[in-house]
Image (cartoon, rainbow, N blue to C red; front, side, top):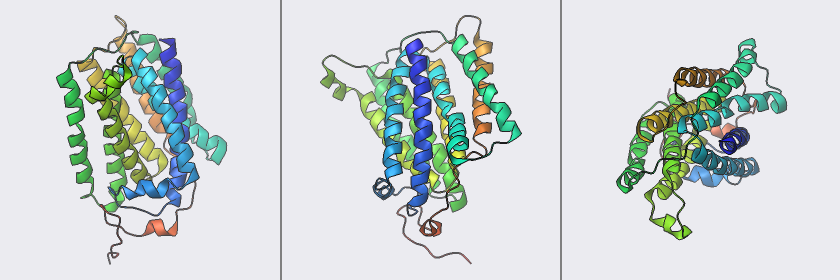
Length: 297
């Protein structure tokens, strides 16, 4: 269990660094349509984005390790603390000031994480039948439908919608990773639907996350993404994957879970990079392909 805790916290730090760097790159990149895959090609030319992706990649690997040793609700909650770590990094390196409420939230976050760690029951991931792993992969369709729905939102609300869809996509990735089995020989992995689900959900999550960063602040986007990425997989883990708390300590888990999530959201409130948006990013664009559209009177 110790390995899982260390991996989850290290993943949180990596994701926080990645969020800050990707936000910097998003502000420097010409604004694209909500579902425009070309956004990734534009952003990949930005060095901060490449480093941010590397940090996310490291966080992803560490998250996979954590999921194998911890209940899903605990691993996802620990990783969600990256929202608070993002705030700390913004204060330290970007000279962003935190409010009194946010300063109180920092120790609250640590207390919540400690309560979660004390309440968690060490266990290995529960094996899922093949048909359930195919169902995980089929869930990509749900994410696609949600993404299409975002294109109907007003531009000012599209960032929030994209953050929500990104959170759902990353939730799917976490759930699929939880049920992923490493076979012997390793190439048998290509026969596992969960492996494809991890890759597809992850790619969609990255695209929607990048697009959301162009439309909303990094703290708002991060709070929404990690909030959903914590709550949704946690519920599924407890209901279907056999995750549980130590006997008699479930109230401790509930308090810790809620406290960590609330404090992370508070910390995300004002701590964001103060980066001027590129003037080209302010142009109105089509929600799908990013083409210019005339301004409304």
